[in-house]
Length: 396
Image 1 (cartoon, rainbow, N blue to C red):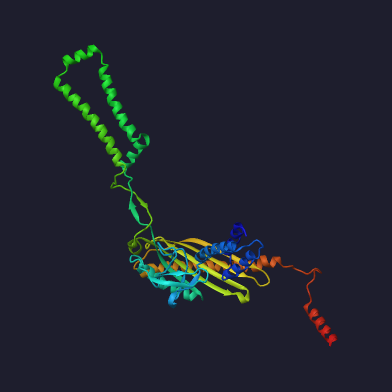
Image 2: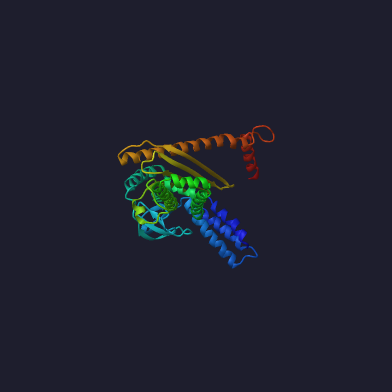
């Protein structure tokens, strides 16, 4: 088996219908290993790529898993990957982190996890209200409310002095800048030497010796000031300032996870598998609040349904929208306004799905049916039934 064959097979796994990843894997594995040129090395390569693909599938499809020690259920997503530990997930409701086998969906190694103190009151209130909402609307629904830490801010050097220093350095290198100052001094001395002899003699008679000395000191001071300014400009390019802008760097300290700025991500997942009746389906919803006082929610819901009795039909649908939310206090009222916006969005989406399904059944599917048989006459079912009865009588 060539590497390209594995690369072709793995994307098919990511397209698996709800609840049928294992079935698709078995079919793909059978196709790969039945090749005449397949070897143990090729099979191992396929399994390694499948393992990565299943992890990607689990977090994208919001797969629901049972927590260790029977603590309940949680959702696997990119949002609840433990910061700094890519092989662990967090369950904010139970304040633990855990590992998961992405093939068997079994969880293990639970450890305590510290919640963010700044956002926890709002997060827990949202979790409480949404748990009640999901239990009322989804028979197998699970909700997870996650506080996702944002990268911490550090001070960068970008004030007016530093900006001016950069402009100078872009035009002249430090050596060239010092050389230009020296050249200016030499040009001044050369101009003095080339003064006509008559003017020089006249200057010796008319000029005051004290003033001449002061002029010489002024020239020397200007030269020193120019060199000093060039040095200060060079140093200013690396010095911090009060008017500094902020840039983001990766978060590295634990206190940023427990007290730093965060956003809130909400996931709702509901799965229903009836493979014995040839169908399965999955509902997924994700909502993002940029901050605790956000006035907008980024919402996205999707539905995936598979029906495969005497055929193979799949429904993929997705809706995204920005929801406006009115700010209110206290936290309980604020959380209630968020949940109300989510509830309204999902109700409208479900109504749209019902309408589209009805239109599809009464419109497109009906148009596919033949209006009349080949005889261009409606079938007389009574006559057909009578003929059937007569046939049975003759048989007996």
